[in-house]
Amino acid sequence: MSVSETVGFAEGPAASTTHRLDYAVSTAHHRLDYLDTIRGLAALSVVTAHYMMAYGLPRVFWRVNNTPLHIWYDGNAAVSLFFVLSGLVLSLRHFRTTKEPDLRQFSLAGYVAARIGRIWIPYAAVVLVSAALVRWVGLTADANPRPSAWLVDLWASRVTLRDVFRELRFGHHMDLEMVPQAWTLYIELILSLLVPVAVYIAGRSVWWLLGTVVVLHWVLNVWPYTLHFALGVVIAKYYVEMGAWLAPRRFLRLGLLCVAILLYTVRFTVGPRLHWDLNRDLIWYITAVGSAMILVVASSGTLKKILSWAALRYVGKTSYSIYLIHLAILIALTPRFMTLVSKYSGNATWILGFVFTVGMTLVLSGITYRFIEVPSIAIGRKTSLWVGAWSGRLQARFQSPAEA
Image 1: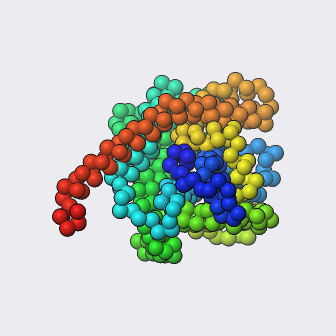
Image 2: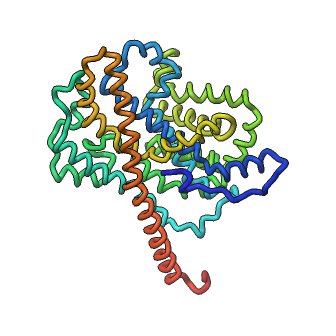
Image 3: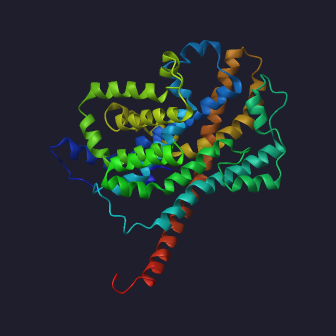
C-alpha cells in the first residue's frame, strides 16, 4: 500500500522556530514518500534474493556474502521490514494530533473491508495470471544455464481449477504453488486487522503493548511477527519527536544506521562471525529491531531526501506489484532469456539475466499497479465507506436512548 494513500499530517504553521514544528511541516509536504521507497527497495531485495536462489551467486560476489552488503539480497529481513513498516503506516494517522487516540468514531468494519480489498484483490489477480502461465507457458525444461531445483519444483505440477480455488482462499497453512511468496500476505492481513487494538493499547502505554506482545508469543505461542507490527505502532506514536530529535544529530544517525544494518543482516553478519546459535524466532526479533531502527533513522536527514527522489518513488508506488509478480517472471520468462544469452561467459549471463528479471519486474509491475492495484484501491475505499456507513446505521438502530 502506498503510504501517501493512507497517511497524512495536519498542516502546521507556515513558519516555526522549533525543530519539532519545522519537522512536522516538512513531513506534511513530503507526505512520507520515502517510506514508500523503503518498501520498494525491500521488495527489490526479495527479487534479488529469489534470483540468487534460482541461479546462485557468482564467485566474484562471494566475499561480500557475509558482510552488511548482504542487505541488498536478504529476503527474510525484507519481510521483517515489510511488517514493521505496515504497523507504522497503518497507525500513523491515529497519532496525528494526539498521543492517546480516540477510536470511538473509527469504523472497524470499514477498515477490515478496505484491508481485504487492498491485499486480496491484487493477489487474486496475480494467482489467475500465474495459473495461466503455469498451464500454458511453464518453466523451460532445457533452460541454459539450468535453474536450481528450488525454482524448477515451484511450478512442477500441472495446475487444476481446484488448485486455483485453493490458493484464492488465501490461507498461510497451504502449500502455495503459483504465488509461493504470498505466505507473508496472510500474516500481513491478519495482523493489520489487529492494528487498531495495538493503537488503543499504545495510546495508554507502549510498554503495555510490548509486554502484551511478549506474553502472547511466549505463553500462547503466537507469531513472532506481532512484535514487528507493535514496533511500527510505537514508532508511529513518537514519529515526529524522534525525527525532530535526530535531525540535527548527523553522526548519531550514522552510528544508529550502522547498528541497524548489522541487526537487519544478523543471519549473515553478526551471527556467523560470533558463532551465535540463533533460533528462528530470535532471528525474527533481531531483524524486527533492525528494521525499526532503519525506519527511525530514515525519518530525517540526507537519507530521507535521497529516498524521496522521483525515480525511487516509482519503485515504492509499485512495491506490492513487484512483490506479487516477480516470481512468475523469474519462472516463466527469465529461463528463456538466459538461454538466449547463454553464449556469453557465466558471469555475463548471470548479470544479463538479473538485469532482465529486475527490468521486466519493474515494467510489468507498473502495468499491474495501473490496471489492478489502482482499481482495487478504489474498490476498497468505496466498500469501506459503504460498510462503515452501514455499520454506523446498524449501531445507531440498536443504541439505547440513554447512549444516544
